Length: 197
Length: 210
Length: 185
Image (cartoon, rainbow over all chains, first blue to last red; front, side, top):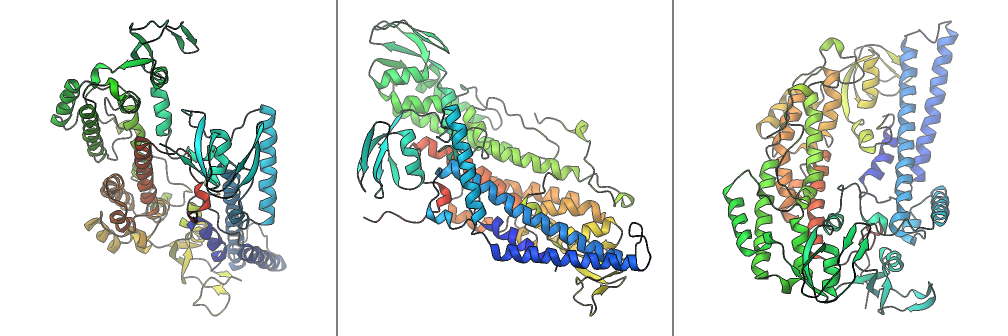
């Protein structure tokens, strides 16, 4: 059936968990665009047929007209599915910067297409320059903190990190007392955990 | 990170409701001498040892944490008052007792930070838990009576946290009712070719519940 | 156009309806029973809703009531609406019903949706707030997408409240990263 592949593309993205990215399916995407070209060709040939019979394309309602109509509708449907696929993925990709920060972990990076990687890079660069002009980090947690510092445990070897004025060695299993805003990114990337009493 | 608080889920997170509640005033008895504090939200103090004064909850908790004051628990938090409230809540199937709008948040903050200032703290705590459970159960019973005739729901004396918990559900459910109710006015056969189902203009026969 | 990018709306539009062609169409491969690449007047074909809808607007086909809203299913649903497995009939039962009702001119679909929703949402509410996870999961499999959303809305605000009451760490590993990898000591 027409449009079935495009539907599968959307379905694949929609059936993933909310806000989760499925790997970019370039294979299926290309198949759908090929289907679109095919519809376009058949649409054109049907219209040509109408013209060859000396009929007015605008007003004729013969079987060629309804055939071309079906191709046209299928094209529009395919286009909608493709655009929804790209659009919804772009929306998730934009949300990543607010969830894991400007550096994407490997496991997410490999689910993006090249254009999407580029999109993410430019989007985060735009956001960074906006924030530096504002002199305000907009990506930090929105809940008002009770205490500006928190206790954390390091879960993975992060190595030496420079923050504010001093360098700290975040060796695995070491515990630190950090500014919340400094710790946030490490925690959301799964490299540290917050300790509470 | 900012993306961790999900704005789609509900209008406020529980932490934000708590933050708002921290502006409620409580009475403290300072044990230090300190000049008046001039904040954007108002002026507080001056503070003299053993002389009670009113401050916002966040300031009270901050002073308490540093051992600079004792907090006087509000009247409604006494075991006697809470027992009355609990009984009244249990007696009525529909009505909600009048409690401070932020009673859930205030009581949690005080139980967390000023346990030693509250008489019968364990009793008071379990009473508040019970009251909350009874009330929440009533809210649920109330919500089970939603119908297509109601496009809004009014429950008196509900507190901030209680509203916040049910808001996402109620919003969605009412929306669904509204949407499916409009279908009653289905176009007749001759209007079948209309592009869109007619939006029902039946607001007049809708009314607020209670 | 508001729903142009809405994936749920796209998926709803893929529901199959059976139509009868009132105009012939050629040069298309949509009728599997036809040997040629054309559809004759009077052929009965199963089409996705997005196509059937547009063709009906142009009086090229006439749409039949889909199985999930026909007389038989309607009676089944009305008999035991709270426990009927709507998801297997149509995961977007309500949304599809809203789309189809004005097109097939069946006046009973609207009241059917309403009465089904009315008797089912209470169960969703109580399960979301009380039931432990494994007990609720069986109930979840019979819910439509809209009901699942409703369940999740109620459930997540309740869990968020409970988490706040218990206290604990504010920050957690971002959920986009999945739940794998527990640090190996």
